[in-house]
Image (cartoon, rainbow over all chains, first blue to last red; front, side):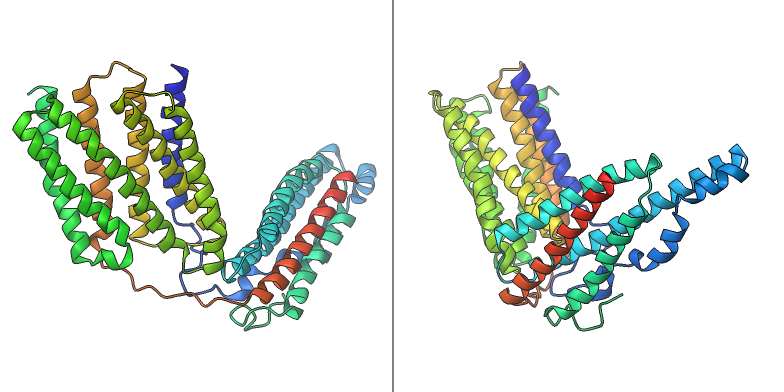
Length: 179
Length: 257
């Protein structure tokens, strides 16, 4: 009885997966045939606000507040810090997703793909998502991450300049792309 | 009316629907866009008409009908395989790099399933059992290949445009149903044949509905995308993957801090 149940469950799952995969993306961001998307939508946005965010996320303030604020104020401050940090990390992930989309778009419009490079892009994406999840949980536990955020943000920000210097295809580099 | 009667009635309703969808495909000149799928539809109409004629003449329980049914089934399966290849070609071939990259993956998925079919059916001697086994594994090859195609399209941010999306959905839905039906037959799950027959007719009617809906509008004008160069691809993917790697390293450091 196990094998038929497995076959039937598998068939139902596959049919459901087909329906899900055929659904159009909500954002409508997928390129239509012959029309590559506008370049600016792929480039980092959140890392531009890093100096402000870094200042806002300094955990040094905790020591200052410990001596002056009531427990309730400290609790609210920690909650707000965690929320801001979580949102900013989500923003950095969005920046990463933009890079990833750009990489896939370059592949889509290329007349030839290299399996090694495609595998590497997919692997890097998986790795980032995994690291992001763990990094986020650490941040939520209240560990300082200011310096590393600094490095991450500058990395994402400089990507735009690097890509601009690289010989992007005309349909992608028709406008300035550095944020 | 008993189940047998309901089954025959459903088949009588589906038969004109089948002609209608085939006619719609011919009016839309689908053979220019998806030649093998158009051939598949014509073959389905012809073989099902033949089956229908035999059924009227000899009855559904006759050996003749059973023989005709199972002998035409491989034709359907092979035609469905060709239709699937057609769908994959039309969806991906405008992006020549992706098409070259995806072809071995799709072939690998189909070959894997066919290999499994060969292994499973090796010890089967009863012809109908052999065909049902083969059909189930081939249907698996169809749905797995469709899944690979759609997963690749989604990964690279490509939209599977109408009517291709409806045609792919119909193929996937019908193949999934046949896997379930064949499993029930093979594992002798004590489901009466008239119920299976009625369910098959209803599933086929639903598939025809999906295809009819997909083919209702005019076929789209196909614009070929402007592709970049190989040099540009190599340069840009290297830049992007270097950046992603660095970002990952920083995330790792963030975790270790």
